[in-house]
Image (tube, rainbow, N blue to C red; front, side, top):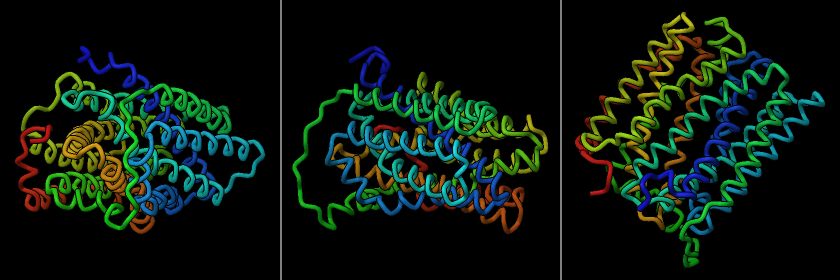
Length: 402
């Protein structure tokens, strides 16, 4: 075994790939959201951007899992990231020629959502094959640290580059996608072409059945789904930046980066000191603290306090991410990881993109601040209910499979 997971070349290439693709997608989403709000000044349209990304993932869930389990996962990622680069290039041209409007931005969001529908489950399923399983929680923490670093840099860099125009941001995103394609192509792992079993309803729904029959896996991913669905405020950040905190695009970039800054610090700590006991209690406690941080953000009128609240929300969310992802991947056999990861990605997508839609709708009804307040309270209620519904999850001690 290597001394650290970073001594494994394929893991390093995978990490560079993850950083590049995450920076690219974060920059794209910041600028798409900012342009949408500039064009329509509508909270509902900001929510539609999230919904446009989520619908493809939901529609393609069963197909995505089969693709990730049947084909070399490296080449699936190459195709996904090449497609993202093409969307960024088209947005560059659309901006340069002044042809971007509400409908074009929504179509671009659908295209990005389709590419990410295949990308996220494939990345999740590939990572355990690159490191010894005993080192997976540490590798997951390092990978999450890289992803969070990119999530910090992406919105901030995108916000500042936006001063030179949206076309400059989209061009930079396309270049990052090209770099990511090269990195994933260099990854090597023990790949054995699986037997081509016929596609049936039984094989299509195997991932769903696997999760449904495992109480701890089901509890962990559904807890994350509902907590972020109610507690997320990402889609409303353009409104908070402009109308509540009175900062410009640079402030929006920093607000988008703040949760990732907190998550980065926690993921670096978990890479050095992995969770070894009381994993279930850590999961529920971190989600509850996430809800409290959301309430602080909703009530804040100070830019500094808002940044701190978002950073804390990201820090607590990272604890739940590491627990959930470790539990899902380590409790799942390799030939099922694609299908299980596809279902898991739907939960992640629902909590993020569908959560953005929910935030947009409730903000349209009640206003941005009440929408986030309702979400924070809802998160705390979910924690209490889920501890009663999934007692074995709350009592789980270790991340590794028993």
